[in-house]
Amino acid sequence: MSEGVSFSTGAALGVPYSAAYGALFQRAYAVPADILLIHGADGSVGMAAMQFARARGITTIATVEGRRVARWLNGMAPATSSVTATAIICSRCSHSRTAAAST
View 1 (tube, rainbow, N blue to C red):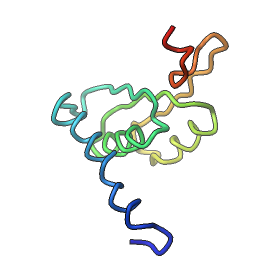
View 2: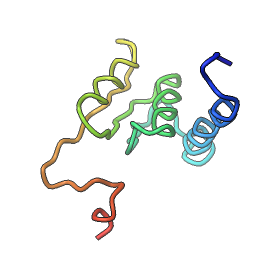
View 3: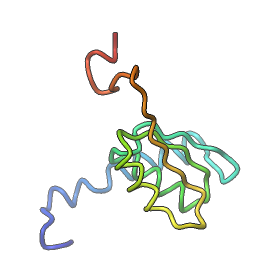
């Protein structure tokens, strides 16, 4: 483990990856012929899902919170990859993590 990473942080690192793997391959049975929508790809599970999808050659569309994060996710994928991150910009959209979104 790197010097700047605490034991508890290192121990928790596998949680989002096991959640993403279970959702993609044990529940959804994702294969390269699929098109995968990852809502909230800027979170830890979403990023893990993007990495698994890229590794398996699955075409991916991702929603993220802003253009900067979309550019970062697009930079994560090599030019030969089919992974694409798309920022959904909308003046009438509500944030999915606020109380107003549930009304």
